[in-house]
Length: 140
Length: 334
Image (cartoon, rainbow over all chains, first blue to last red; front, top):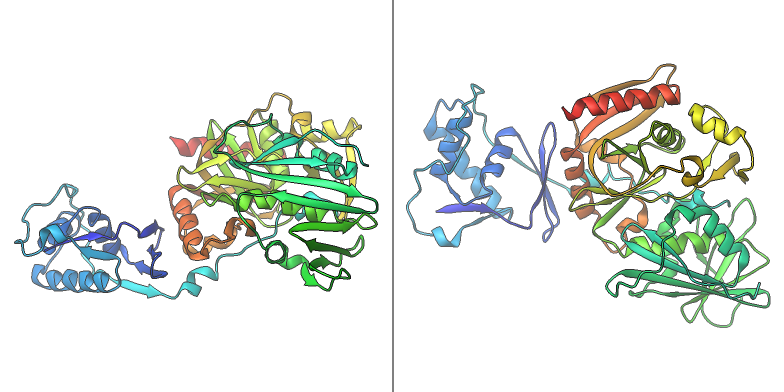
């Protein structure tokens, strides 16, 4: 089974988190670094096995079995939130073993559990200030 | 009044406003403010065009908009100028609705009758109608974000100058332009969200007394420039072309955002990593959000933040600050 991003989701990779927005459900979520890395990889259809290979090229993964559980949980949550969909063309197929073009350079950074934090819309919009700028264009 | 003028065409972002006004003070003030946005008539049948016709009937002006999309103008004005206290109010007319505001130069009440705005010429309605006209064009462009920011181009790369009221956006925009760089805007910057291009929106600048670029100060001191009284004091109003005749403006891709924090004795500029909270410094004008879900706009602007080099600026002497911004930003391209 392969997974892929919902194409309508918009993302903003920031310094300390990556924010995602799904316009249909008006949902935001924030990803930590490894979550953001998996999101980047999901630009093309990826199986759990593909993603584990990707992680292995990017992070130092000590326990692949545990990582597999965590990646599966991450994907399940992503699918539940509609940020990621199961690629229908891959349904029932065996997991791919290839790395799908994952970056070859391996980092020594330790792998951390990928996390999704669902955010309330107001949490983002509180930082959104709107102005009536322009009124000073004209003397009152 | 009563004189029928030819159409005056202005470009705001990727849309056009056509003014035909029998009300001469409105026509001349609009031209004084937006001469830098003036364009020849556009023949493109697909262009976004709002037409504003102002007729004078005795003591009243009747303002009609020919707009491709219907608009509840009272709700629009209330949202647009919420922090200025524009509200729906009672009307003396037997039919229709009205909106208005209390302002230092006197109350303004505009009736809305059969989708036309009707204002008594005994009051100063021009600023309200003029702003509504500009923002009617901007609200039709969902691919744009119009931000309360200055914008310049340095080495053909766009630089957004974001900061609150009085942070020195106009001063710095002009000081950078005085160094030969492109001036795009000093207060409202138009940004195409898909291509991340900054567009020229060159209203006439209003220059407060106080520190400024030496070249700008020299031009102002020569006199002959229009002075207007603002609530916070007098300002000189001048088209950018009058200050820098050779300054050209063309769309440029956004490369850097400078967040203007405060004014100090010496300028300082440092690179910063964009975070969610910085969204509060990219203040969109409310017409940019009209009919748009704010969440969608917020994520697009956060995407813009993440794709640009971001800097935090403490401004000092305007010319020294402009030189520092130029040097630091050009170095960051490497």
